[in-house]
Image (cartoon, rainbow, N blue to C red):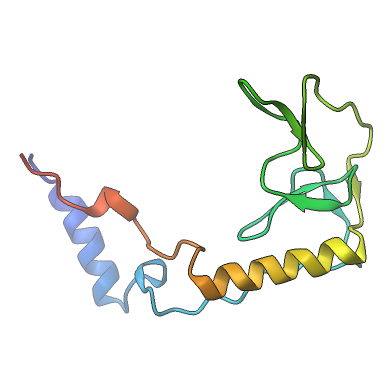
Length: 128
């Protein structure tokens, strides 16, 4: 496979200029923090925490009304055969959901389940 000289130069230049923060696995990202004082829009995403479902005032692993064949539509922690209709576009989370979200985000950061690997497998050689 032929590699582009431009890509090599761009990466070399970035590394020479002090490195890429996203590629340094020792960089310690602060855990995500959410607040009961903030208003979040429906499907607002927080890495390590999930998607905010405004009608349910909490965070969940899938977007609001996410559809998965064989499961149905996901909203508020449940799968149903029909999407959940709602006019709530934004809301403030409950204190309990904030506490749970901040604990989940902190645990994810401590366990390393938050990806800190830069370019992933796209930077690995797959020569044949």
